[in-house]
Structures are given as C-alpha cells and as structure tokens.
Picture 1 (cartoon, rainbow over the protein chains, first blue to last red):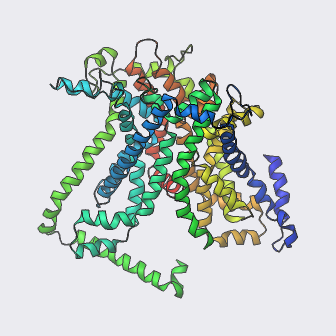
Picture 2: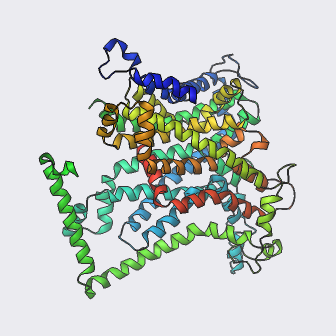
Picture 3: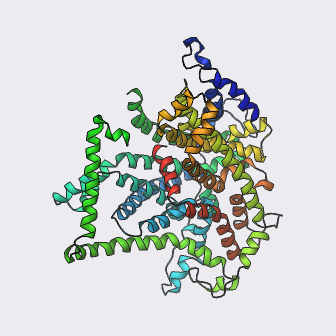
Length: 312
Length: 322
C-alpha cells in the first residue's frame, strides 16, 4: 500500500498542465496506475475469463481443462441430457412468469404508493425488506411455509377444507412455481422501487391534462404513463433477466433441484458438473449457453441505450 | 443556485417557479377547503388503496412472522399447532441451540462459526472493494485518460455476464496466485465482482460534483491522492455509506462464491445455514432451523431498517444506470 502511494506520488507531480503531446502515455500517470485494478478486472477476468470459458467449451476437458478440441461434441451431449433440457424448460417458465409478474405487480404497487397516501414509508419499507435477505434465507422460509405437513396446506385443511391440496414443492409438475412464489416475494420490491422512481419523474402536468380531458385514471396509466416510462421498464426487464439466468441459491436452498430433477436450473447444472461431477467440458458448454441467453437480451438493450449517445 | 440566476437559464427558473407555485397551490387545496364533497369521493377509492396495500403488506410480512414465531416455540408445540399461531410458551432454547450447538457434518459448534467467518469475510472485502472502486471512479470521473471509458464499458458489460462463466477461470487465477481457498482469495473475488456496480456509483457521483472544486485543488498544487483524500473523500460520505450498504448486504448474502472459493472451515454463514437446515440426517428441528435462518438474515435486515432511504438510494443508483 505504502509502496503504491510512493510510486504514484512521483507520478502526480510529473504531468505538467501543458504537457507536450509526445509524452501522452505519461500524462495522468497516477490515475492510470490507480486504475490498474479496474483494467485487470475488465481485461483478465471479465474479458479473458469469458473468452477462456467459451474456447474451452469446445474441448474434451474432464477433471482438468485440456486443450483437446472436439468441436461441438459437448453441446451435442448437453442438449441430449434430460437434466439440461428440464433446466432450460424450468428457466423459461420461471423467467417468463417472473418477468410478467414482477413488472405487473411492481408497477401496480408503485402506482398505489404514488397516490399521495399516508404511511407511504412504512408500506415501502415492508414491501422492500425481503430484498435485503439472501436467497438462502428466502428459500428456507418458503420451504417451510409450503411444506404440506406444516405450512399453508395443513392450515387450510385444519379450517375444514379436507381435500385442499397445495404442495408445490412436492409435486414435480408445479414445483418450479413454488420457487417462483419465493423469488417474487424477494424481488418484487426492487422493481416497485424502480417503478416508483419512474412515476415520480413524470411531469404533474400530464395528470392535470388527462384529468381536464376526463380520462379515467387507469386509462391514463395504461396508455400515457406506461409508454412514457419505457426506459424504466426496459431497465427493469434487463435487471430481471440477468437475475433470472443467475438463479441458483434459491433453488439450492428451497428444493435442492428436487423432487427428482423437477426444479433443476442451468446455473446449478454448471456448478454440479464443474465442481461436483468433474466434467468441466459440460460445465463450460452449459455456462456458454447461459452467456448466450444474457447476450440476447443485453446487447440489443445496450445498443438502444448507448449506441446513439456515444457519438453525440 | 448561481446557475439559476444566469440569464440563459431563465426558462428553467420560470419552470421551477411554476412548479413551486403548483405545489403551493396543491398544498393549499389539500389543507384549505375541507369540504365534504371531495372527501367522500376519495374515501371509497382510499379504502381500496389502503386495503390492497394492507393485504399485500401482510403477505410480505408473513414469512418474517412465521420465522419469528416458529423460532420461539418448542418442538411439541410445532408438531401440534399451526405455523402462523403465536407461541403458547415462549422459549429461547432454539436460538441458543442454533447459535452454539447446531451441527454441520462433524462440527457441532453452531452457526456462531459461520457468523464469525462471515464477519471476517465481509469487513475486509467491503473495505477493500470500496476503496479500490472509489479510486477507480475518481480516476474515471476527474482524471480522464485514454482508454478509461473503454475499460469501464467492459466492466459494466461484465456485470451482466453470469458468474458461472467466470468461475473456473477465477479458480485457476487464484490457484496460480496461491490464494485459492483462503480468505484473501475470497476478498479478491468479492472485490472483482463487486467492482462494476460500485465503480459506477462513484464515477457518477464524482462526475456530479462541480468541476471547479477539482480545478481549484489542482491549481493549489494538490496531486491525485491529495485531491482524493482531502477534497473528494470528505465530500462523499453519503455515497460511501450507500456503497457500504450495497457491499455489506451483498457480500453477507453471497452463497455461490462462499461455496466455490473457500474451504469448509471458512464457510460463510449462508453456506453453513444451508448445510444445517438441508442436512438429511437426524430429526428436523424446525424451531432451531428458523432461529438459524433469522440469525443469518439479521445483519442485512438490521442494515436495511437502520439505513432506510440510503438503501433505496443505493439500489436505485445501482439499478437505474446499471
């Protein structure tokens, strides 16, 4: 630390305000030295690591990474593995539902909070607190609440509805929805906060104008406010999507992928093959597919968001 | 303020004024004529709004309630009763057991081990990652250099890459450096993966500060570190607090890096909690499990409730631009 400070201390005095162009490399030398961690992270880990994984997904690596290229063999294996196909199906179901529900619920809650109500802070605090909790904690609580012997099912049966069945975590067909319930509980608060910020950014004149014209509130929301909030929706969409692909802890804590392999997800597949199954090639191929999924959403978004502005 | 008085900015000022008078008018309308008519028309709508929010709030609070209530019951009461009912007989034994006696594998010294591991991981990781990211943000905002923005763009895109893609390369890098499985290694991992969002936070904040400040300090002969420590740091306490909140809750709640990059004797609390609760051997002691779960959630919850608006600001700042 001290050595770094000393080295950079020298650099700080070196660039005179009117440095000659040839010494460009030495200009702002301290700043460049200080930014080394960022440069290393960006180049070595983010760029280098990603390229490395993609390249090694075309090899036959098992216990250790080996540069023996086998073309698309790992991908063939991947897509003919039942567990992977189920993981993808689960991710699609979870992803689609979580996208729709978080956006809708998040927006409706934000709109309710935006009605100049009392106790807004209290409501907001309550709706957002799950977001502070880890997925592990979230998963374990909901595992307990959805337990058919103790949780909701037994309570409602106790009320007299003997045939009531609600055991998502024990029924392979709907187990992924049990995870969805927990995931929504944890994450909707964040979307609500984003939407609320978006709603607060809308000019009050819009509301006045729509009221003067006698347009009902719900119509104003649907046809005027929502289109105006497009950037917020897109940001939320990108956030939710990148979160969905990373879905891992929640499944590990809540179901461990079970019953059977009913709630497996891609991130778990990657982890299990890389660190449990000693089959690195499969892990690399699977993680490359995850990367592809994120890229499909993020790259168009980035082009929309930053593509135009850079030049201007 | 000075800018508002600038002749060029008159329209802005005018708009600001109309907005202000607008608010004043609305406030008057709200407090002034307390007539019956508007009130009655509002009340039906209010019932719906408050009713919905109340029901939703109950739903959101339910899991917390279940955790608290269950952790205070004895096992016989749990087997008989319903999970939402308050405890008939309050016992703190599950908490003691979760903290000091719960077993993971062969270790039976409870969650306290994981708690202290998490503290040992979180404190240095948060400090190191925030220091490095703040210096990065400062260099990017005030000392623009060639290539800076390019690296920053890579960094921001990196935030969207699934961690699974970079896990194994990171394992190799740490193993080569002799840090794999150690506390230092995990600190490096948290610093690296926390860097995008925290750098972004600081860069945006430092960019928003008036440039004259920086220029004046330069004219007075202050260098890179001089300005950072004597001008920027004292001015940016709020943003440091926000960064602290993001990093501490994020690192405390981490599970994936904890399992991949540490050895069992260094497992953070989340990993240990999962091992305790989801272990297959023995009878499930739900009350102990719930106490353990609450204990693990306590630190981020405390930060959340104590920090209030700053937490919201943190996620909004990180999310909207990220």
